[in-house]
Length: 306
Image (cartoon, rainbow, N blue to C red; front, side, top):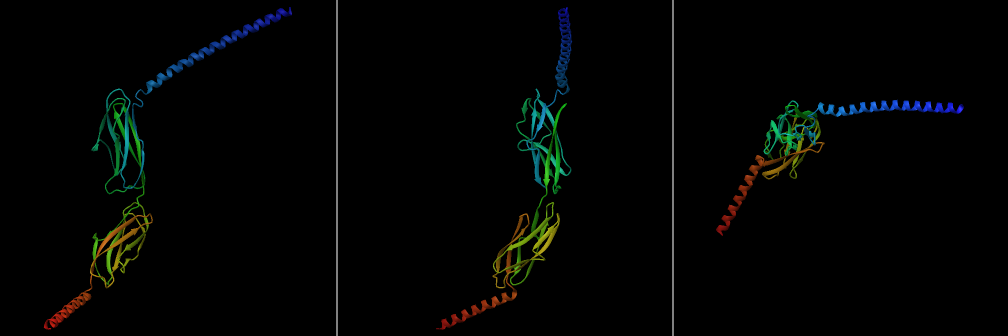
């Protein structure tokens, strides 16, 4: 009796496990079918959402270029067209204020407003985006952005390019008159006006004024031979005092003036100096010459009589 009960219990338990297993398998199959339906629909949805994506691509190997204020910048851009037909793309570019920006190509280079691309090919020559400050402009240090775009109907792409401008340390050194020659009198102080002009964008500190001169000459700068600080766009006037020795022979001599800044920039002026003899010494020379001539005349007369 007990054995038959045990057998019936085992049969019932086995039947229960079978029923539960069947239900679980059906739910798994439904879940799999549902997941499979979602998976099959996903690629279709993505494919329909952007059918023209990445058909056109603008690419630049060096999209960020550094340079000093006043420099020109030139970016090389590739156009990659992955379509299946020939297309003409209109080109456009925008840049910062007070800059000239253009798209150029070919040889000789010309500005181009559009370009035709064959399907599946990269344009053989890189297009250049040229960025240059307006004439006479020195941009402040900073980042300057340029945007180039290409479009044909509903297909378009653009690229951001950046010019990183750094400070410009530059100065000029010249005579106020612009002449590279002067006349001086031997034995006297002779003054010549010169200027140091900051043509850069930052303050230039400590410019030393030096000179290379003939032996025995004295050359000084007034009021000083050092410019401690020079602001951008400012010129400082100084005076060069040249004093050749009194016995200097009349003629042309070469003097080199040099301005050296702390960042080792050097500017030079090669000055041709014509030395004139003082008037009194001119008369002395004439008298000496006349005396020599007179002496020779007397000697010839005496010798002639003998």
